[in-house]
Length: 163
Image (cartoon, rainbow, N blue to C red; front, side, top):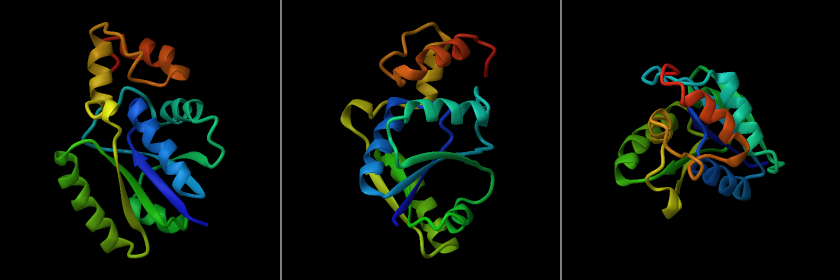
C-alpha cells in the first residue's frame, strides 16, 4: 500500500491545501493530512480545531484521514510506514526551503521520499497567512477556503484578537 503524508500547519485550511490533498489522494492508496506544530507560527486555531476543519473539508475523500503529531516528520513516516511526504509548491521561493527539508527528512528516514506537487495556477498566491490577513480586515475569504468551513473560519478570524 502506498501511503503519503501531507504535512502542514493548516491554520486554516485553504482551497490551495485542498487542491494538493485531492490530487495526492488520486496518486496514493492512503493519504494522511498531518497537522504539525510549527514553533515559528502563532496559530489562530487549536490543533483539534484544525483537524475538524480539515475533516469537514475532505469528507468525500474516502482514502484520506487527518492526524496531529508533534515530533519529527521522518519519525511519523516510519511509524505509519509511509512511502512519501507530499508537499505543495507555489513558487521558486517555496522550493528552496522545501528542498532543504526533503534532504533532511531523507537523511533521517531513507525509506521515505518527498513528492512535490505544483500548485494550480488559481492558487499560486494563496496561503493561510493571506486568508488570516484578509479576514482580519473584514475582506471576503469565500474564494480562499472550502465552503464547508467558511463560516467557522470567518467567525474566528474576523475577531482581530484571535491571533
